[in-house]
Image (cartoon, rainbow, N blue to C red; front, side, top):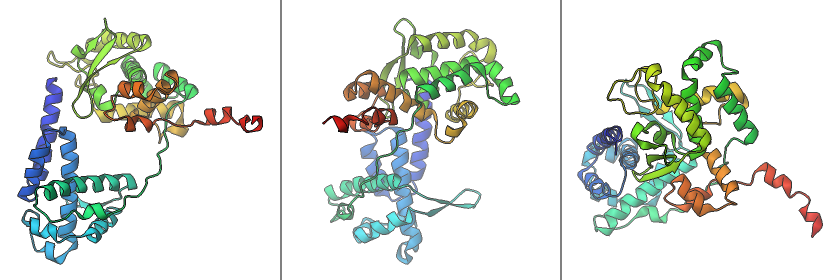
Length: 352
């Protein structure tokens, strides 16, 4: 694992530990047991969800309000029932969050996010129940709603070509954006072609180091979500654009000698996830403005998934490996009946 990835994981774990330290001691024991199996980002996410729950208890009840969050005991938790958990789910629909400056903003969770909270609480309570630290698990009494299948958003062939044309030529950009395109055009073409030929996540792309690229094998070493090592293979087209960019990387971006990142910003440092998101949005605005609010780097990953599903005849297991999914359930999310596919069978009903 590269120094960048180690440092990133360390920072995320430190942030998670800061959250965990504000909760009761038994919460820390829970995470000590789980961190063996979970990535730094998963620990951070679960810690934030549990902190939101304990904050809800503290702020919504006169009894819990008299206590510091760290003082909420196992006996207190054991008094809660499924109705209390349902109240928490209702709270998540629109709850206040105070920033360090004291400004309050309201967060509205989607049904999917609320489902994630339910899973996090259920896992936590199971840990306590199995160890006889509580006498029951109230979350098991709650019926989980069946969530509607999300629309799969991706670029079709025509839109993809329009998007790539804008990245390559700069057509449709503002005058100021066009000036930046003169410097960053080769970098940006390399980025979008790597996305579209490998389906990697934006975090995996910005985490790429020079040593991760193997042109003899046409491959890139990546650390997947969850910290698993994987190898992805890029197309000949992506390889050509990647080589074009690497030829100008040093002269254009002037990186320090110890900068190992493949993709750099104007300061010669590793490009951030946010910068890539803004870059993609800029070119979508220039080429397909009607899709500007829908297409993100993750939707380029969706585009790759849809392309591979068609190319492999719907081979889910193969596409699962290509996408780096730990479960095939994640891959089935991309199985969409497109308008083109639906239209192609419109006369079948008359033949039988």
